[in-house]
Amino acid sequence: MNTKSKSLQKFTLTILGKNRPPIRQKVFDSKDFILPGTRVGVDSREPKTRKEKMDAWARAPLSERDIEITGFMRNSNPFHHLAKAIDTSQLTLLIPNKGTKVKVKDLREAALKAAPEGTKIGVAFETYVKEQYGHSYSDLVNDARNKVIARFKAAFAENLDLDPMNDEYHTDKEIFLHLPVWTSESSIKEYKSLAKQGHVYSQYLAGVFLASNAGGYKVECVEYLLMAYENKQPEAMRVLAEFLHFKNDYYGAAQCALLSIDGGDDYSRKIVREVLGNTSHQMMQTSRGVAPLSYVIIETLRANGFDSILREHFSEFNPDPQPVMHIPGFIQGGGHE
Image 1 (cartoon, rainbow, N blue to C red):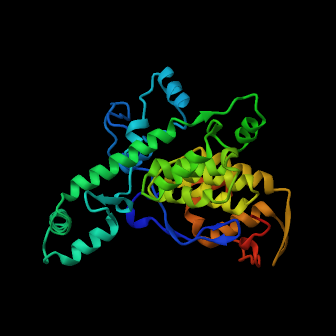
Image 2: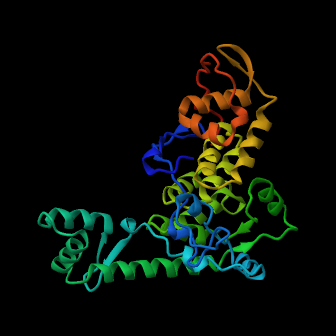
């Protein structure tokens, strides 16, 4: 992809027949998901370019057993590093001895309004919180972060690998790249709560479990996987593509897989090929006659902003110019719960 930030597009994804609010395309280059000490290239150097960072992110373990396997393979354990990723603006601060709760986002807005012009942002936050609540802004944020991470680690300890003898194992293994995992309803509830506090690993796991047998393959997973994607979690959009493919939302799956590929997850190429393979024998009426559903999907993707991604990653799908094809109501979908 063109890795310059200004080139990143906004997309209105159509998922399970409904248009989602526009989201900005993400590139998986955040240091939150790259282990300290990671080296790339023949000269074993720290990843510096965006492309190098896109190839350096660490896979998120899904259970304690998953972490053990990482150790058996003599790979670095990414768990504690990945658990630190938080969208601080979404944290809720508890003011000691006052019982007051305030969201960081709201506090920051109030602090910037109150600060004299030219005040440095960090100084504005510290000054405002000290004046209003008598405490250090950075101390309150660190305390809130630490409590969120501690709650996450307690919930994570409940995650279990599914037994290969269970039917649920084989169902999930057919749907997802990751190994099938299970957790309790209370842990899923905790992940959802932490997700809304900006904890990115929790956003991802809430989505993973809601999308799978543990959470009942619920459409609710979409909200959390998109949250994680918007915070540059590298695997969330691929899991969403796999879930939508399972739900037979082929167009939705293709959109999500393309964003995943362009962000830096090459595995999602497999999802695009499976989607097009599964739809190549299904026929659909268009303004130019009957056409394979796979062709309709590609043309609809092109018409909705995905043309450059298709051209870069799937050059074999770039035919000679064709007249515009109209497929009324196609992306509205239907029959999904």
